[in-house]
Length: 250
Image 1 (cartoon, rainbow, N blue to C red):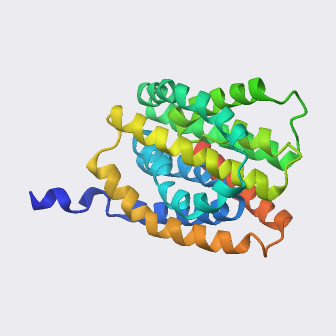
Image 2 (spheres, helix red, strand yellow):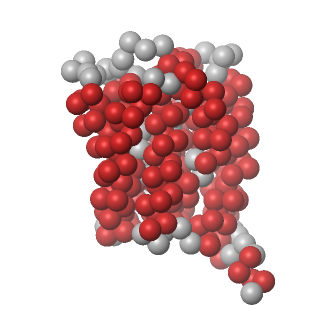
Image 3 (cartoon, rainbow, N blue to C red):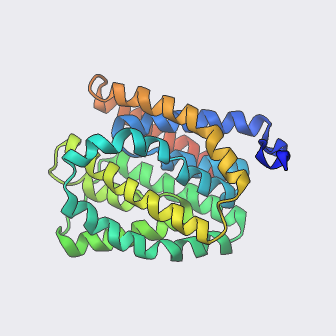
């Protein structure tokens, strides 16, 4: 009975240290920009532990920055925009999770790496969405985001590309993204639990990842008003590119 409450020894190895380093780096990016942590955590943790463990850990460890960042974002976020993304995304979360548990692990891991690489290259290129805006386009973006969230733990790419191409200030965009990711987090907790992906081992791994993630997020948050946005953006995108390439070829 006591052993059920002990950290599973099969995970107490170098993978735990590598996972902690990954989530610390991801926390730095999340704290500074309001997004990006899952883009690092999902492919790297999937490489370390496999997608059916790495994706839930990457998604649910977001509880830490949600608690840290959401209270301030609530006051700034444009909630009509946030809900236009979030409701369709929540609807398609289960469909994405079905893909996660159905596709072979290696194929799923490489798919996650490829998605992150494409997003990083698009962001680095400076491409901006110039198409129509409003409720319907926002809902379509949310549907794609929800599918990706359930399948890969990465809810952000379409929403990030859409919002970063708007005329909103960096602070407004950051708040909208934080609010969206917090809502999706609740959906992921429910969906992964119903699909049987939240086991005792997963909860232990999430607990082990929380402290480095919290520290990274706190440091990144302090850097937001101080650091050069261009420099930090380039560092973040370089990190995303290198990590996704490694996952693809490993």
